[in-house]
Length: 355
Image (cartoon, rainbow, N blue to C red; front, side):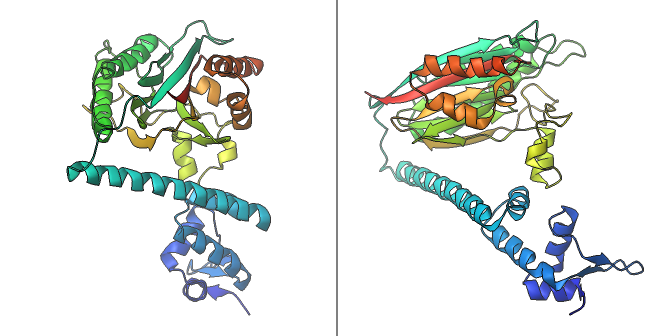
């Protein structure tokens, strides 16, 4: 059988020509040939298996960047990757279901405030200058209800920006609100933090900072995230990344234009597309999420001075080792220094415990 037109190939693969054009543009499925006169895309029937795999992965909601990675794997490894993706989707769906149940209960008047005395948090913070810097623009904070890390832009005002962002959230700690109101409270708090950082601008200098924080009410934790600091959860021995970097290179990965493996070496890896204090907008777009906290959970919040230089497997091992938050935090900082600690290193390690 000869080459198929894009229309014929689309029908055989049960796709649309529009989808095939998208997969061509992002490098997922290139045509076997392009007619030099008409510009029509032509496909080899041997490409149908890959096209059908891509279509199936898209139907389960997998992002294009992850599909690219799966298509490059051997079948056994690809199956493991799909299974891992679907377990994440199932966990997120269950979490949204719990949130929906909570909202229904509160809206119907049948909800109840979570007992604040069943869980407690044990925590440790570290904020190191690193081996190659002469100033520290990072900030870290932890208390029973609030965990936060911020990474100010290097230069004048960076340290003040990260400190101001966290101070704005510390004002939320005394607020005793039902779990269902945590997200609204935190959304207001991040707007206040954004205004506080913008207030530090002098002439043409505009300091900015990242901010990643968790605010707890009973067994619920609200997450707010702007920038490329990160939050992780170690639960039952598995490390889950809770945040997505707001960087230029991550946007390339999301668009399928850059392999995830190439991020660490990209010259624009640290260029932020979202940060507190940036731009002339009154509000900042922040990622917000509400999660369940369980006894035995261990949370890590950190600046990119840790996450950008220490392998995730080493982070998981350090978090999962023997010892409390202080011991784990020391291990993480030591890992950063072991690979040169080229940036400031801030981290918060927090254990959720039953009381």
